[in-house]
Each structure stands twice: as structure tokens, then as C-alpha cells.
Length: 213
Ligand code: GRF
Image (cartoon, rainbow, N blue to C red; front, side):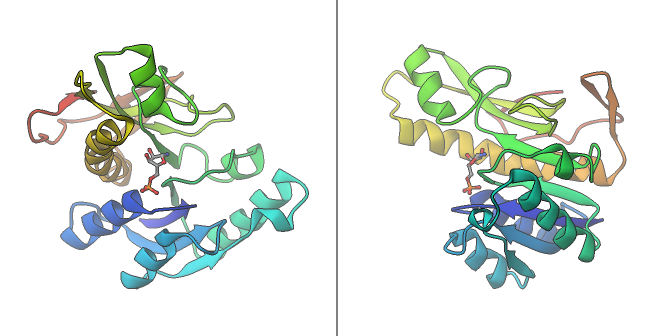
């Protein structure tokens, strides 16, 4: 399957995806990495893996829909069939969402529907939660809202800082994001209302990760 990845920053999830492709755990071809920021480290990671890149600066467009239309054009020109949002910091409009129905996957650093939006790790700490985690979900028109494909949980330690918790969550993001994309590639993701039914048996994850489907 032809994969497009949208990024804005550090690119560690992009790196996990590209690594999973190289390792044969994700049967995709990363045909285009699009960044809305020219200085994103993710672009260097894409180039190091030989993936084609494009920079589409959102500041060149007054309207969100015009920016999304340019992104859709680039993805379509590359023949993209599946889209991963890997640290992409723009809200999507229906122009982009409806161009790839049920084929846009996002990773969020919390167990949705808890702690939506920015600084989800800090939100979990400040709330006093004992467990948080990561969610891969389909993207719909609401922020951090679409049907959930995979979730994995991590404990919050009493002495956690935002940085230590973020690192623990990031490790599970890197495991479940490529795994969720592979489920899509295998045609095992069925959307029923706002629920996702996963056909077949899920691959085992290394302990102590908790893995719910
Ligand atoms: C990740 O924590 C992801 O869950 C969130 O943005 C962050 C992106 O990190 N959506 P990276 O660019 O993949 O390193």
C-alpha cells in the first residue's frame, strides 16, 4: 500500500514507521512525506531513508481548506492510499478528511477520550491519573476524536516528570502506530459506527505493555 506521512516536527513516529517498513513489519511503501514546516527534523529522517519529501507551508494560505487542498493534490499525485499523521500540528478540514475516507490515521499520546489536545502528557500528570498511554485512531472532523484502532497503556510513576512520562508513552506510540497501519494494510480494520472491529488475532506486544483492542 502507498503511504503518505504528514509531519511538522521531530519525526520520531515517522522514524518508527520507516523502520517498520524496512524491517518488513509494515508492508507499505512510504511514497511521500509532507511537512508544513521547512525546518522539521522529520524531513531529515525522511531523506535519510530515501523517502520523497515536500514542504507545504500553511502560512502561504489564508484558508485552512486551501492548505488542505494543496496537501491532497500532493498526496494524490504521489498515488497515496493511506495517510499517517505523525506529529502533524494542523487541524484537518473536510477537504483532506473526505479525500481519504477511513484512511487517515493519527497517534495521540493519551488514552482517548482522556486528555485530548496539546500537552496530553502534562494533562495526565496534573490530573493525577495513575495510567495513561497512547491511541491510534482514524481521523474525523473533530480533534482527537475518530474511531479508535489501537491503544496501549503505561503507568504513571509518582516521581514522573513530563519528560519521563512522555518518553514512556513515546515508546508505545512507536509500537502501536506501525502495527495499526499494518492492520489497515491487511484489510483488518472495519468501522462500525464509531467503533473499530479488528478482524483476526492481534500480534503480541512485549510486556509490560498493556494492549487493548
Ligand atoms: C507524538 O507524541 C504524537 O503522539 C503527537 O505528537 C508527537 C509527535 O512526535 N501527535 P514525533 O514528531 O513523532 O517525534
